[in-house]
Image 1 (spheres, rainbow, N blue to C red):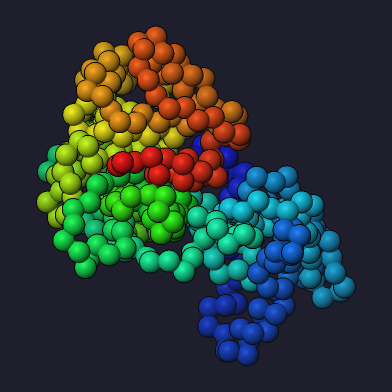
Image 2: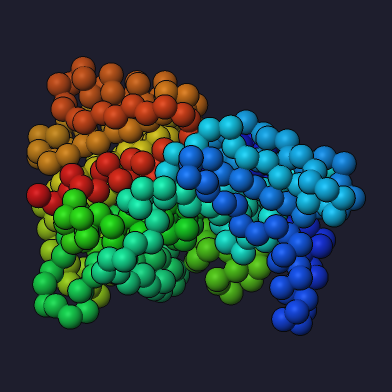
Length: 391
């Protein structure tokens, strides 16, 4: 996600949160009651937010997809509240408060989500009981964070793997979706921000998706794993790295596929492999699949960062894209899916890619949504893309 967007949303723990380090049970209850509790969705779909901020002069709610909302004080005990003017559509939302202009987490909501170096509270709205991002009473798959050897990078690296319900009790072989994150993300991004495990569980239970393995590697080759999960220690997450989008990840991708095929019961052929990604991950998916036309039958580009930079021109991975696409489509991919928001800053770049495909008579599926370069779009694209795979 873009740095300017992240800065607008950036929230940190308020100093009062430190009081929760080691309170007694009675103190915990008192603090929770004082905070006002989790956001509450009413029967009309509107959501009420309550914040405990004694001594504050102003409190503003910052909520995904909504204009900032001013909270109003209630009584003299430091309680502030606001209710959304309209019902919130079912989905996943991140939020925090601005207390006297200072970003502050909701001290009554223990559910947090990180995007690069931004931490915000998490809210799931599921008014109809069928939100694919919510946890439902269905069979659940298994998520593992596994380490694999990457000979190309001379390193042990970590990736997330989703196995569908029933994998451990069967002898079946499964198709694989390789799902790639955006700039600044890591192997946990699609799990935490994309809700992949919940989406897959729900779509499979509804019969809308084929049972499949989903592999989510770390696309930053300068990192072994998400910050804090490797011997590098508690480093600060960042948007860019030395080998950022320079071809190194694409050239090392065979290490991932080969390891997955060796360690899981996969159907190790083109017909049963898909690759998709958002932003930088869409860029990786574009070039990995173009350079290996006989390896992936399904390709998904979600707000893909498809533009070229000067340093790319010197790398064989990025040379002759148009010719490579003609060869890729000559091998008949079963699906080439492009999704982009109308307000996405990469809209024109994606339009140029589509012009190239159109000029060469290469058929693809295109979906244009509202909004911009944001997770609510990428989660939606995943829900639309996955049911199209492996039929």
